[in-house]
Image (cartoon, rainbow, N blue to C red):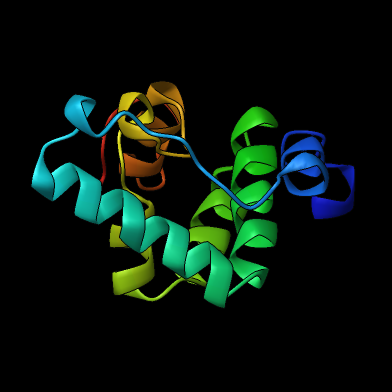
Length: 111
């Protein structure tokens, strides 16, 4: 799946390695979470492939693929990625909503 992911390719290829964030927009907790996400992506580059797999699965309506890809991540890694998009998170609000739904075909949670 990931080789077709156009979402992450420009981000990875064009990224200069720096992130400019106005610290005043984030409180200390949010800033710490953003740093945790950045650290994860820097130290575990394979996670970006998993993120692309998750995004592809969501866009294709593949609930099983989404859940399998999300399950590849350790709980700590999932927590590092669970950052709202307005604070620098990689998943959109809709994608985060889809990740909350387990085995859902009709939009209702089944866990």
